[in-house]
Image (tube, rainbow, N blue to C red; front, side, top):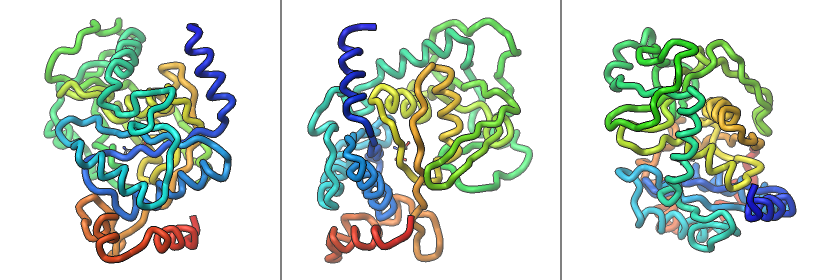
Length: 300
Ligand code: GLU
């Protein structure tokens, strides 16, 4: 282990609690993001911890620099401060995912070498056709029909050669039937069964972009995050991420999944609900104090 790493680890140990805000610059932040980020910032503050702002501009087709700037401005307007981030720097820079590709490639190579991921030529249409039943259960933005295993090599097959031919997804082979149990700090005991609740999932995309699951696991570990606070639509993804952490010998942080803010009709808020974007609320004369009072009053 290098000296740098030792001193980084020592710094992290001294710092104790490390939380993160991980917005994607693909739209304006809305009320739901604001509430989740406010909860994250309160949890870090009350523990005397460090808050990291990570710009999740992973997807070059969807992320936009002006939205990243708007996201930081909106968070500052809300009164949230962070100690490390793309604007302020810090010991684990860069804090924008677009600058961290080397770390993701390294993790990809380790997974290939261990025979834990394989290339997959199936299109989304192939998968939709193969899906036996319509998907049910809580919405998970990362969900897709259970992968039917079309491209999965037989168990015990030697690792795939370590090149990334264009146009193929890379999937993580999940341990079918294994129950992944964890204690969510808000929701309590959670249990998901690999191969039943989710199947082999994509870690590297056919357009040569690392997938969310891989990037988030690598970054949370390298940035020494001790607690992940985010929306409860990602509960099931926590189970996927724990499998990746184990495969890569990385520590598992604590998880605190927040309740989602629902729109008028109970619909999940999406970035397209522009009327609830922080910008729109601000233009309508709502103050950050009003929002913070509202968040504090609502039970978690
Ligand atoms: N960038 C992700 C999002 O906007 C964050 C996911 C996470 O917190 O793990 O949904």
